Image 1 (tube, rainbow, N blue to C red):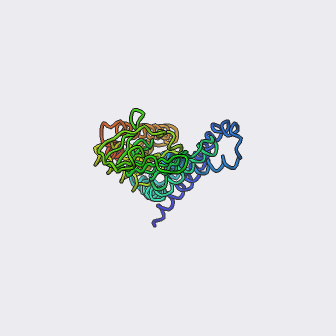
Image 2 (image 1 turned 30 degrees about the vertical axis):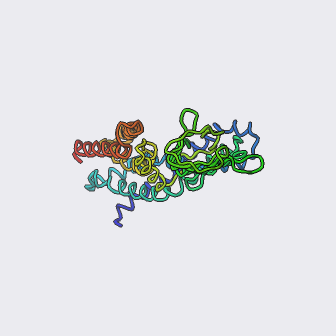
Image 3 (image 1 turned 90 degrees about the horizontal axis):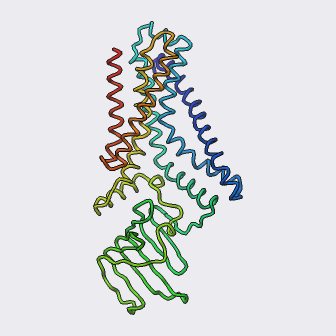
Length: 357
């Protein structure tokens, strides 16, 4: 590695470590005091609350990553400008693009590694955090258990098994329901390819049932509604949120919903958010650098830094606005976030050319 690359990237990594610690620390403190009253009322061990905050860390880091990675690059350059090193590099003939490239390259590589690491970690930690809060702190009974996307529910005299397809557990596939009497004898058995909770009733599709009133004779059906003793809310206390699923599970869910001609917005939105949102960091930094480096002399720290922060805020607004459009179903969520990143990229190229860098 060339000497000037080490010289430029070293402060970036140092500032990144400090900025990450500060931002995550502030976020944790806010959540700590926000949840403290609930913990005190529930009278649970303080160690459980600390475990909850620990399980929340991957999600917090994920949400803050674009701001952290872009803000750190901007502050690192401001640090060089404050010491006069930035002016010295420009005097030696370093163009603004040559000064920017090491920061953009490091930001992209770090983001790529971050996405790779969070893919298996984020779903597990999110589920543990949600479970800890809902069950151990709020004292809700975990009547439903989801293992690798499959729901196992046991009622007083019944059990229910199915593959969860929606976060609210209102739509499942490969469903088995069985109910027994007080002596343990079967009263009703249902098997179906799909089941949906709608208008207060469970509707089963393409399956068979055995009813004790009909002598447990197998009866095939294409569509049949049953009034069961539970709803999705009672089935699943710890909901199968999209954030708690692995990417391959989300993709399989998306394909199944698509084949069933049902909305695929939820899984597609989560897939796009998980894959593309962290890369907002390098793109925001790409937008802020020409704004910051466009100011020279004493204005670099004051006006340049302020405009750079404003560029990050505006760019993040564009990206999140594109995500909101995808979440509403106006365009595919798989295209919405990349579109937002593309708009920021085009704006960055325009600013570099406008400044004649």
